[in-house]
Image (cartoon, rainbow, N blue to C red):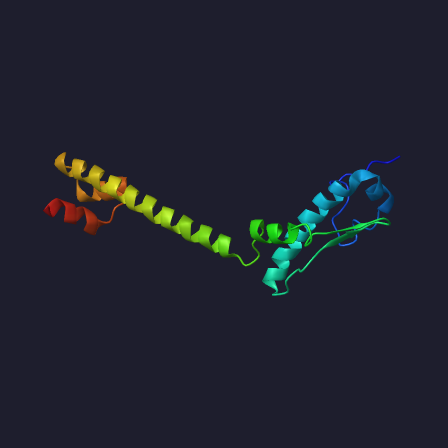
Length: 145
């Protein structure tokens, strides 16, 4: 008999209804795991389009399982890692820009320190500009100090 796994079948709303015999033989937990991932994604989509998911049912010939009855809907709703509103993406982009600004400021500070040393060793302004990438205005400002 062919064994089914969560990996070899696409997750769809009817995934748990396709194999009632296997579900009746004790693979209900596997169906719940597949359904859990499906509902997690569906709930994220529901939040995005403002249509909440109220419950998810797994139905077999002998019984059914309600995700709401066993508390999974609430758990999935609070633990959901999928963010289709792009809040996480926007936050990461802001964080990256802040890091770039900090690193750019640090690089400029290092260049300024290097330019100070070059000024002490009597390098010309043109040489300092060429070697450090600083502007003429920045270098001449350092010379005045």
